[in-house]
Length: 123
Image 1: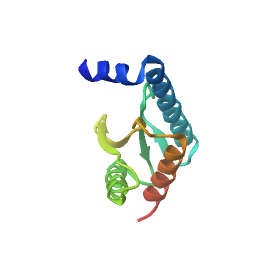
Image 2 (image 1 turned 90 degrees about the horizontal axis):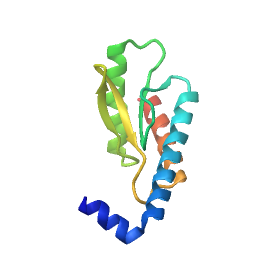
Image 3 (image 1 turned 90 degrees about the vertical axis):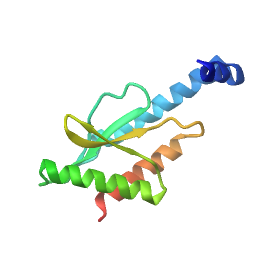
Image 4 (image 1 turned 180 degrees about the horizontal axis):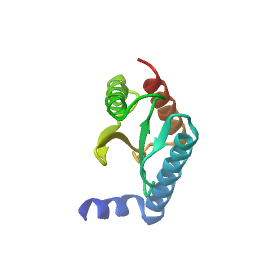
């Protein structure tokens, strides 16, 4: 409660609302990109700024997709281009992407999507 109070006092309610709208818009943009890309899936409804995704290469079984998911998430994190969080949903690995840092703009999310695609499709 104290953090929220400080945020409201320092930025104001309208600035906070604008930031939440911006983050949600960026998350929905990323969701749309993932939904239209071959071999990519959105695994949960985007409610706020978190997008749950998985890259599923053609012909890979569930265990291979799990290993692939963990590997590309680790490579992306190690590259420093972004920090994503591997997590399990229904016993299978996926990646949670949170779009909501204070300075995050659309260009950052576009670069993130490019880095995700490049990392997931490289070996």
